[in-house]
Picture 1: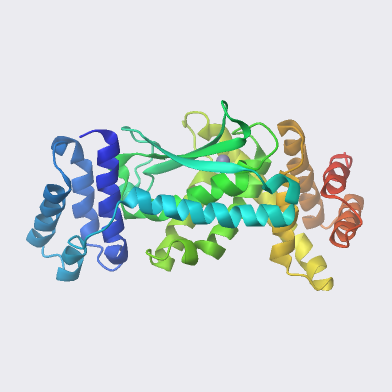
Picture 2 (picture 1 turned 180 degrees about the vertical axis):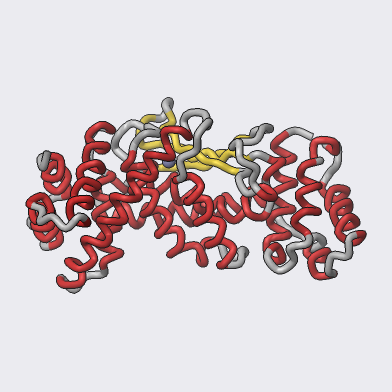
Length: 345
Ligand SMILES: [Zn+2]
């Protein structure tokens, strides 16, 4: 069996078991054993494979509803995820168009799949916890307005937990990268960190509508777990993860502080703090600039946060907040906030 068929088979299994995954933990090690041994059964089709897993579960006394979950006919799981992607894309585009009309319109983003046989991360994810990753690229032949999000599946590790994090990966690629105006770079603190926080919040807001088949608590547990894993700094990791993870940490720290800082101001102005932060982030993400300048912007915000937390009265903070006030009142552009922050040095 080739990797694409294996991935589809594992995705079917994952989709079927998602509703019972958290209620019947005894299936976890049984399924893990199946996933570990999948290579030795490359020739099996869906029916034989599911039958084998059902028998294995039956032999170990797994409850009937769990075994029955594997007997329910499901459509093509990758087609289902494509539908999820289309919904997420449409919501993300609406958000971008509302925040920055010129940048959001005309952008097309298509979904592609790729497959890999090896483990993606050196850490051992339980039952396929890390069986999926994603990347967003410009389609060189069709120019900057055509971008493609590729979800890479590692079939052997693709179980229910991987299944529930796929929409988060889609949100990350679309919210962080599909409309960004600088070249893609894994060291970009703003795209990989700051916007990743925006993406996770966006995910949490829309997930129950775009992905109703998975239990909400499971989606939250695994997507936030994944977000945490990709932010942690790991030694001995190959590029680009070695650079992306610290970039995530720095960008998250800056964005988290900014939410805190802006909340009070937004409330004073009678605005929804979350919506105001989301809108500013998207506008900043659409500025034509360089990765180096975005790094400097994030460093500058983190510097301000450190000053404020250590109790120093900060001239930079007063200037930043007066710019934000002006921007909220329509008197300043996002570029003025961005370049203002860069000039604080
Ligand atoms: Zn990214």
